[in-house]
Image 1 (cartoon, rainbow over the protein chains, first blue to last red):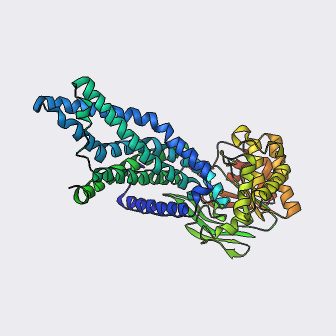
Image 2: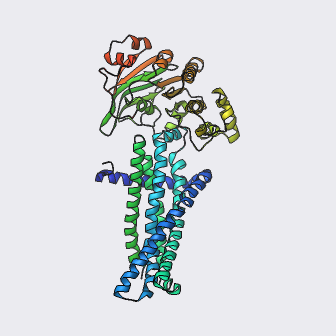
Image 3: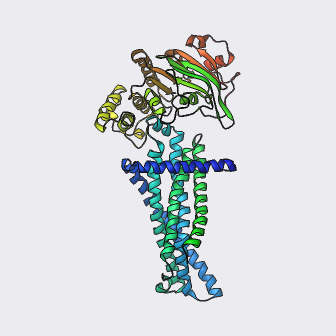
Length: 257
Length: 253
């Protein structure tokens, strides 16, 4: 019930998200990361290093399954395997690597941010921060935002490579496609990389803001933290899908030939 | 002098405060009591801008602070400290760093100046030897002492204690009560204490306000409270589970 928000509430939630985003940029501009270097490094480790296995497994599996399924269809319709590798690489760069990695990060990192901040809200630690004249956005949101932005880009690049390598292994070991045929990159342009990179950056901005907003708006006790965590994952995943649609359209009209 | 005038506050459809008016004279110890969820914590958080009223007026030393901005409340929070119900020490900081934080943020002291001042405050609550430990390493009672030290670092004129003796052993609870009394008698600090600890109420309070159904049911001295014939108050004092008292559904405040 709590997740089924009215249209008016959704609009005001969007406005609050933009307000939180501008405050975060403001505090980053005022040197929040310099003052909170230790916390920033801890968040980088927490979000990045601890997500590596998760990203490796999910993106690797996705790469293997995608290539396997496509090759089955190609084998039936058009036994011409040389197009599969380049098409798979192009799709990964433009679409699947950023979006699937974005959804995975929304799940793992987004829930973590919301649970952490939400717990601080219900145990009044955020109120205690305000009593000390410490601004919660400066202390809690800015380091997590910067860490998530950087790690989304890095994890996506890493996940993309894992996925492609896993797909290449399946193509070679199961279907006997030579690596030099599968890993042909001559039809990938800078515009394709730019489209993928823009998506990474957009997701890296949207995920921590959606999660931090859910955390800061936590109400009640431990049940409230659970609801906030669910809301963070739902909102962050929704942001990833909507941004993917918008940026794919933008890239189609303005970047690709 | 603190005064709340006709304060209304709702969360969703639930009206927690429905026209609460009360005042706290300088130097007094004012207890705010009532069942869980009666809105006691919600009321006191209005004073320091952690919650904003839907309607009503709050004044501190004659100045209307109802509509101050978050930045405007910085000066109010220097004068008016709060000891939270769950101590709310920051887990990632050592005890001394917790106490140093308001000194560094409010007074812009250097790290070594803040360190000396924080150590003095920890000595006051017999926690100096544990200064380098972390909140997770100590028990609830000790955490509460550090929270009190943190609240007193800025020499506040007003201190809000939210259930200061809840979860403490009887000896630690008596120590906290004595500390509240000393702050009032020796330093003329005004205290607002949210509590339902009857022993504390009758040994420390100068004045008591009981909240019930979003309004002040009784506003008087401990003797007024003891002698009241009101059936709800009698049930509260006697700690009876059955009686006319209606318990709020939600647990906030």
